[in-house]
Length: 283
Length: 118
Image (cartoon, rainbow over all chains, first blue to last red; front, side, top):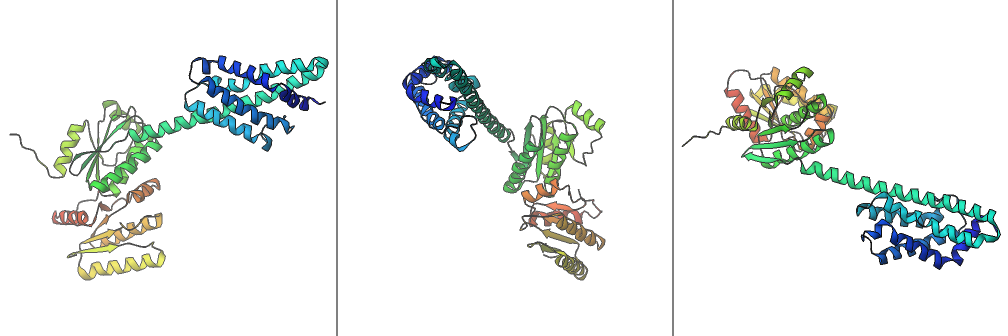
């Protein structure tokens, strides 16, 4: 009897005890100890995994897990990882789902293989390799899911942090907070230009009080926005220029191409109102 | 249009059409004594570098014939594309729509002296 078939056979023979030993392990680990997954749910997950695991083992291919035989197991693990990643579990909690199966399996193999220690050792090694691969696969899937969450949050942050406000009939303001990279610039340009069309505004004030540094890249992005505005027939005023930024711009030799700059939003607004012909009188 | 000429671009310009346009326009400026030309591109969803250059050329020709050109109605997506391509169309006035474009022309021409476009 080869080591391969012996694992599958042992699993069949001692399924009940392996499963219950594994479930005991699972309910003892932090995932359920903290009460975040109900024991019933864990048992169900264990049962489901065991079924597909058993099926895959019976195909005899246990040296690699990327074939069609292991597709269902992979699918299950991906789903599990994703759900745990989204629920905020650690990668340890997620991977231990697979790794905690080692002890019960080893014990079962040891019991069964009393007659032939050599073969038992081989089987143990095969199981270790297999479960390591599955465990690593779980961790990779978990990481992918986490990155997905981060990317989505980044996207939301981008959209939230560039609001276009109407200061006056014909005057829009865009307070920019944070650094200006190319992705942000794209979103800024799109929303600002769209607003210009909708409100038929003539002047857009870009307030950069909240932009920490202006280097050549940021300056380029700003100028792109200014140019796009100009192409659509709107005028641009940049406000919120801090002394350090003024110094940087001159030191870098950035050409502002005739864009009017003001130290603060109030001054920029006053200028914009003048340009569209609005005056206020004090009573 | 009174003393202004309105050119509405609706289709993608290729060489022949562009040359025809330049010809027609310069002749019309001279025949009518127009001082202002409005090029309306609000129907264009895409402007490539060829178009950009053509608009620049037409504007230059008009200027030599003592007429000011205003480009109106650029769509946001087009503006972004042009900017990404590095085309800023310097020396051409722009306005949001035909109405604003006419206001701009009237203002600039009545001012008398030669205002350089932004």
